[in-house]
Image (cartoon, rainbow, N blue to C red; front, side, top):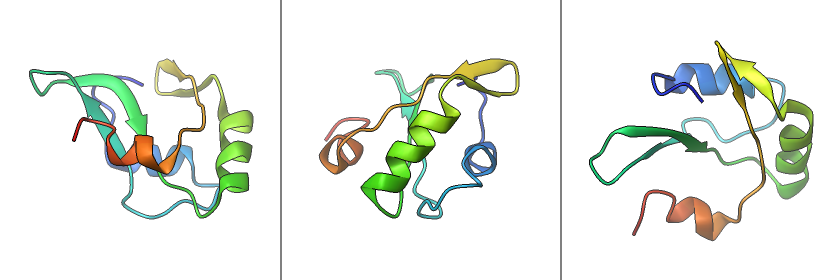
Length: 81
């Protein structure tokens, strides 16, 4: 994702899928700067798989987004413990 991506843009990107509102996490590096990664929770695994498949390599502004499904545990530790 673009480093300047806002939470509202992530919600808009996934608007056609059932995700948990305000669950988006933006990835940060060890200095606290955005690193272009993110995670979001969906209502269920099937919805997550559908979103990942249908939105893979679509764009948020000028950058394409690679989408994949991660586990809930990976989500919890997305930016570290």
